[in-house]
Picture 1: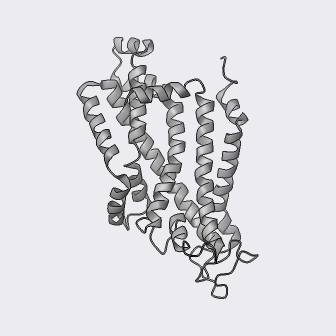
Picture 2: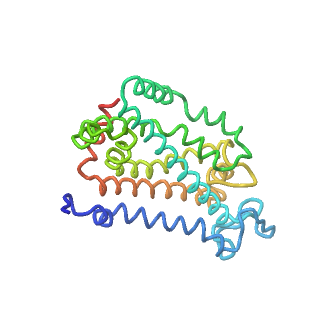
Picture 3: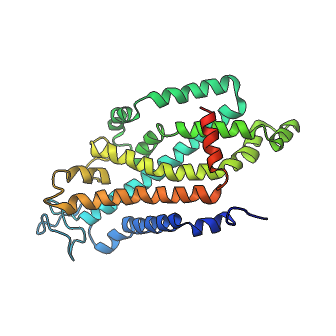
Length: 292
């Protein structure tokens, strides 16, 4: 098989500086979140009464907060929440957007009009305000409920792009031949349409993680997401928003980790876009615009 645009996708991905930087950063954050607490010896809820507002040092790598809790352990717990909720919400949102977009683009007619009406209605809804109203009602249901809630308001743009690509793909010869041979819609979609937009969906899901992380952080910052005694990056930033200069380690460590986490997923997403479909990146954008 012959490849253009710099060789196979894996080789292009490895050669992309953004991919290497993003992957290295994400691995480091993952290790900090899931391995770091085992090494530091502190839990996110543990209290060291002899070390109130202690700056970063040997006993507490990121220092302590106002009641003696280890900031490193709390940041690690916040990263765990952000990674889990963000990844699951992005998976749900991309999957839902793909299903809606493929059905609208393939079947057309009343199905297309009805589904696109739903997309348009969801796009004009003030998502964050709705999340603020609904999130407190999910307390006690766990982080899976928050991931599902965030995903419910993050699939519409994906659906529009998938619809546009599906409308183009269903007119290709290989799809027309399959339909002429009596292959059912479900089989045509699974075997001939979805595989041709796999690169877009992978990239979309990767970038969507960053958006989901920001949504979860925003909800927790304003008190509508993760609740005490548990913590997230949003709650840590909110608790230290009044002391960024007097006790900077309490604010800048969680805020910096949030920036690095979002940056890592954006770098990987951009690299995936270029590696998996270098020639079709602009075409996909044009198709998405034409489907609006």
